[in-house]
Image 1 (cartoon, helix red, strand yellow):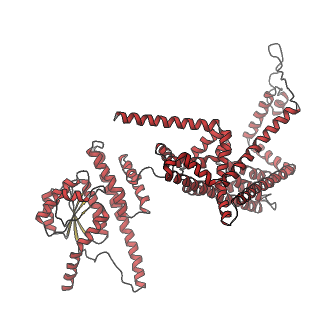
Image 2 (image 1 turned 90 degrees about the vertical axis):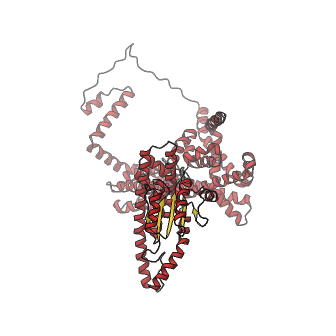
Length: 636
């Protein structure tokens, strides 16, 4: 055991060291990895277009060149149009100067804060340039500051300015321009070769990474490609719609509040906002700054500016809080927190390019965690899939004495699951875990009793909701039947012709699950009689003799279910051999054939381990009693 723990600790240490090494390589090799990552991202975006052209019988080389050329041309045209419009705006700035000056003066005159801020800015500027602020202070009405004289102890500061040679200036500007241009050309070349040799690259990755596990590696690559392509497609659709709405909203704002002045270049600002929204978190602020400045400087009054602010606030609230979490979460498989953490991490590693690539890169990390067992913690931490099953989540809430949150989880499950499935797959396993932990000493009696009472409350609440739903459905069905001549069908005849008695094998948990079964049977038209968990076996036998039920159901929960069910079933068989009996051992992992031998009850006694099987068995046992009830009704 100690050796296994030592091996496991060593494996975790090696995994941590490998992660640190990978992060270091990504950080120091960002000049190489950033162009490659950008090229891979663009390849995922453009690959569907290449495949479509290939299906049109075009050669792959021609299809790749067409897609890359058209995409580059579209980006170039968009950049040219936006650049021209920026030049036009800059050229028109002198005509906006009067309105802008008037609004700033209005703000300055109506706010002491702005006046004080302006004064402090002037003082700081004067101090920073070592210029006396006497004249300015006199204009502001402040006392003149003490003059500073330059002495031996307080010499005049001297700054030595070196003039660069023309060749140095040329080298500086050339490096600042050529570096992005070289990166762009490198990305385009990578994209062309990745699109042209995509199958060969995939085969090489499979051979290098997962030749011994070809099926698993292929699934991982397909999963990664599907998620990233779906994310990029969703992002493109959302941002395109966002840009169009911004353009339309700016046009409407100018028409309604601009006093006859149209908002300039609305299509350009919509295009700019749509493009900049590809940059997570900060792109929208950069894109919205230009329309906001124009609405403030161009139009008289504040109507257009307020409308523009409201437009961006409304669109961003709806898109970022409603549309994107649902759409992007389902397309990428990432949680909202993972997207935020990924943006911070990749920005730290690769700067602005990392921010742009943060979501696709994190998708790759999550897929690796999904298919590599040693890195499964990445999928758990960053993925959007629930890491706990429903019954574990409910059990955890009940351990924490949070009955309300447990009930909320059940209500959420009720939207797409039947009551029978919730009982079978959620409440019953949670109750079984509580019994097991109590017997192992991991749960005290007070907490167990709280969980059991919470289960009773949940069952009662769910039963009431189900009855209301059935009543509403019955009323609707009755209204439909009155309009048609088709006969209405019910599960059982009225007046409870079949009486089922549910007996707990021993404890409270047996009784609670028996209540689940009884509630489902009552909803189907059966009449139910229950025995309490505190009843002795002899008292249960006497209750059967008194009530004379048509069917007896024994409810037994693990871990001691078989032993308790065996004794109770034996006593019932000895006294009431003609009464149909069913034994339910509520554990889906139970080997029913083996349990049947251990219980050693009548061979005709059905043995089941879930609610669905129990209801089906009771329906079968009820058929003879239904026939007898029908014959008695005819004779009467």
